[in-house]
Amino acid sequence: MIEARHLRVLRAVAATGSFSAAGRELGCTQPAVSQQMKALETSVGTPLLVRGGREMRLTQAGKALVRHAAGILAGLTAAEEEVAAIAGLRAGRVRLVSFPSGTSTLVPTALAALRAAHPGTRVSLEEAEPPRSVELLREGDCDLALAFRYQGAPATEEWDDLVVRRLLTDRLVALVPERHRLAGAEAVAIGELAGEPWIVGCPRCRGQLVQVCEGAGFTPRIDFATDDYPAVVGLVGAGLGVAVLPQLAVESVRPRGVRVVRLEPAVRREIVALTLPDLAQVPAVAATLEQLGRAAARG
Image (cartoon, rainbow, N blue to C red; front, side, top):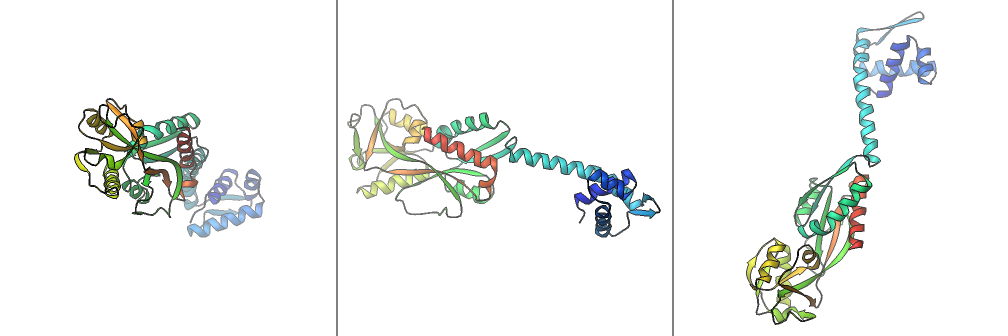
């Protein structure tokens, strides 16, 4: 294996014509130069210098290696500078996956702050609900995943192998049309909505809703299902049913014709940012995690 330090010594010897002169240029002793040249010749398996009296000249192999050394060392220097830029957050890339209501609330604030603090860092964004977002992280298709899980729900996945940054606790709220009989209520028990037509959101939220309703002794009659939160709000506003959504989702849309009512007993979900232990050490990923935490705290 050819080492970069040996190539630097070879170039110095070729330029100066002697071990002693090369040593002075490199700031090391003549014996050290001689030892490194021997190590390089051993690595390539052929002589690189013809030693004759006070003068040294390159063999054909030596000339070829010196010719390539300039490009190799320039490439290494460029690589070192790029890595240093990434480590110093003058450059870098983060692949972020987020669920929709996180994308419209936490992510914009976090990424704006990240860009202001580290303008060389670039973030790509893709949307996916958990557990798919967590799968993308484990499969190496993203660096950071914004995810959630409901408190008290049966554990369908474990995050023990991941770095977990807890961001906030998001409470579910009920949405009813503004002329609904419960529109003026301060709080509502989910059992009071047992006879209503329901509009439901994402598959995971849908499953959680059914579980909560069954715990209250009824199965919801689902008339409409959509992953689009503004569509859920619009359908409720048109008087076509009621819904239960995370507070974060409601904050991401303008609820017209709808009343938001606190749900009792409380149903909550935990919002987290996830990454792999090794990725958590990457400065750009760590900075993005920090800004997501700050965005959640400000909310």
